Length: 267
Image (cartoon, rainbow, N blue to C red):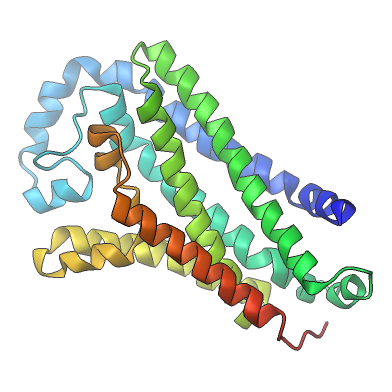
């Protein structure tokens, strides 16, 4: 079992390195731009006043929103969006292909012929998914600690939550994608469905923000659960969203386990 997990981890290592480099690189880039804009925020705010309030809400700059003149407000608007979108995409791809790839590569029958059960396969691959996402976010945390310290405004709790939020979002997309992969077996198809889910729910979050009548939709999009405004301004992830996130992950995990053990697997 341990050998199986090691092999699977090595198999996913190159993609982990690539996605981690992209996310951390973009975070560094966005924060490195802060000192250059620090002295011109009054001009930026004057320019933003011309935008409709609803549009500013989308970027977290409405009333009670992010303050761009602070490093955390700047990162919440500029860098955090890239982290949740790109990190969510990585989680969706990883969760959707880690099982389906075995059938695409016609290695699943060989794997099942070994003294390893379906539950062990599922547990091992799920553990690799969680481990990869954890490693990515630990490296991101170290990156942000260094970057905010260099800027001269490091706040531990805010920095931690700016990493915990994306990690929670990634676990949601990974668990949903893993469940979808049980029913859509072709890795390319399930990857497209998972990426569509990641992008589609992002636009759903925008719609929920733009229109008061559709504000209830925010409960159906995980981007709202880890909103940068709540994390930066309140230094918290709302409890109700935390519960919803945990429920989604648990239900998705149960669906994956239940149907994977009853699935007719063919190479």
